[in-house]
View 1 (cartoon, rainbow, N blue to C red):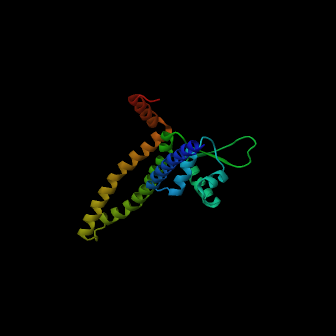
View 2: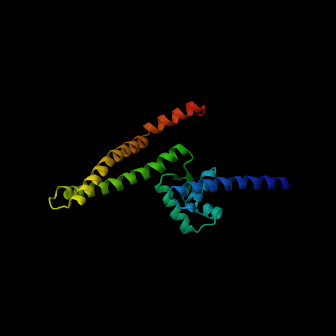
View 3: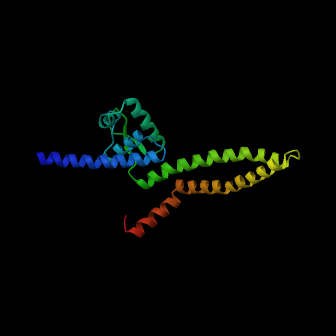
Length: 188
C-alpha cells in the first residue's frame, strides 16, 4: 500500500511539472498563468471535465474558472463536448499540439497584422501631407519621407503575414510542414 502511495505521488509530481511547463509557456505568449494551468489540467486529463471538476482540481473560484474557460474556448484550444445525460458543460483540451499551434498563433498573428495595418494606413496620408506641403520645414519633410518609406516597406511584411495565416488556417502549409517533420523524424 505504501508503495502504491509513493508511486501515485511520483505520478502527481510529474503531472505538476508538465502543468507548470505548459502554464509557463502560455504565460510567455501573454496568457495568464492560471489559464495555462487550466489548459494543462484539461490536457493531462483523459476525458472531459466540468467547471466543478476543474475547480476541485485547481482550487480556483468558479468565476475565475469560467473566465479562463471562455478565454480558452475563444482561442480554440479547448472544446465544449457533450455527453448524453450530462447536464453540466464538459470541456476537453485540444490534444494535438500542431492544431494548438495553428489555433493559438494564427489568432495572434492576425491580430498583429490587423492592428499594424490599420495604424500604417492611418499614418500614410499624414506623412504624405507633410511631404507634399510646401510649408513643411525641410527637417520635418525629410523625417516624414524617411518614415513613410519605412512604413510603406512594412506593408510587404503584413501581406506576407496575412498569407501565412491563411495558409495555416486552411491547413495547407501546416499539413505539409507536419507531414515533412514526421517523415524526417520517423514519427506518425
